[in-house]
Amino acid sequence: MSLRDDLQPVVDDARDLIADLGLRARTVSTRVRTWSGSEIGAGTATDVDTAIAPVPKVNEPPARLIFDAPGRYESGDLLVSRITRDYTEAQLAGSPTGTAEFFWLVDSRLYRVVGAPEQKNFEWRVQLRRVTGSPTG
Image: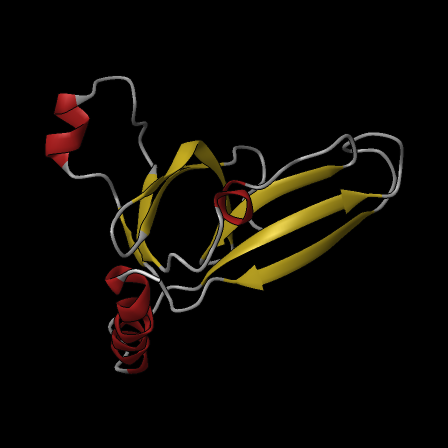
């Protein structure tokens, strides 16, 4: 194990404390929606939600990023950061199949991952884009 791996639980405990103090009040989870039919949208949908813990930080992209990367961000996009490295890229990006969809829920609104999750020293970062035509879960 590396020093970073040894320190990850300490960093996550600090993130839990921030959430316990009410400084991160947004609800953040992932959702796998499985359809009973032979394709997405066919049959009955069954949702399985998994809360992201410790609660990550959620912000809109800062103007600096929007100007530095025109076209990469759209109005309403969110940046989710300070996600523990205990998750895998597959858990954060999802792996949709012929009958399953993957979403993020932030305050009960559906989002999809844009690009690939970005791994940093003590965190993952994910860019999300609002799903149109579906105001809530």
